Length: 277
Image: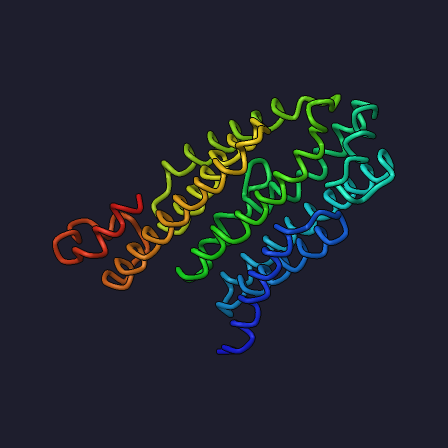
């Protein structure tokens, strides 16, 4: 149903992600962030049932709160630096002399939107319910496109906040704490999951923690390492989703215990799943 709208929203999400990655100005960043988010809210509800509606509503409410914090942080940084161009040297120069507490509050509020988009703690609670309501192709999209675009934009913003090492705030410690919390939450919560979609959701949270570790260094090689990990994650993620989708189609169940003994009858899906994992 509604195939033309479906593909239009898919293209709009990818376009929003590309624009977010290319943004060097807070206004264009926020507009592209909203394009990415709003298309996501609509696509989650494309199942047209109660579970999809519930997932879409939770995603929307979390996203609205995170976006509000993000805009508040950007406005505070504008007040501190007098510029909305976060790639400019002026912002770095002004931040070097800015008040430490105000810079910390503004930076954390700005980061909230990105942490929501990449499903990182403590803004990750929407992920299990949203992923559970998605078909497998959409799950593969949601676990890669918004995450990669959000991480790329976050890296540029953090390098600006870092101000070439002159920032009064040690952003390496802040990012390290977020990465540690995300890793713990994602990996340990995954241990108790029996539904494959919820397992993939918590896996996505944990993967965000690994990628945030590379961001925490804030060095010249951070972007290169991040892209390498993204490529490996995307390949593994698509293989895993493909294997799980085939097994679910064969068994008619999305529960892990339903796949017992399926390796002999579903050789290729099992191989894809094993390689992906």
